[in-house]
Image (cartoon, rainbow, N blue to C red; front, side, top):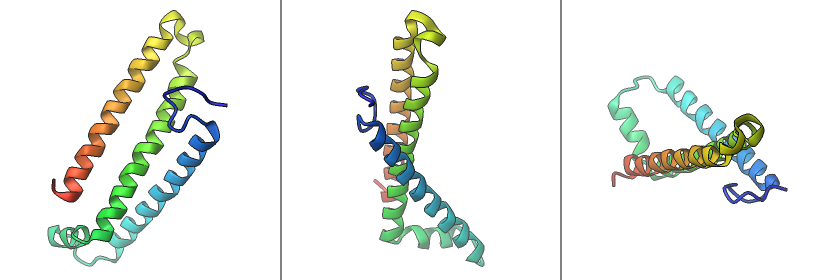
Length: 122
């Protein structure tokens, strides 16, 4: 069982479920956006504005943004645990892994704040 404090849910099964659920949300959003682009006769600023002025689209986009953050965190946490370990890096592995996870967390948090500002005009 995963017990690392930097794990998203502190459970390997729950992290796996978060990643699968977030992948489904990301796939649905991608298919929706591709379908909208294909079906939209004139894709310009006004069409994008009309789409994103609707509350349901902003909520859907925000859910997708949070899903992307959760999906990325589980993936980066897994990568750091698998490849930034003592066998590969020696005694400095813990510090390097912590720094890697800290940078990932700061970047993802910044993207979340930026995304909320863009979507809701804050």
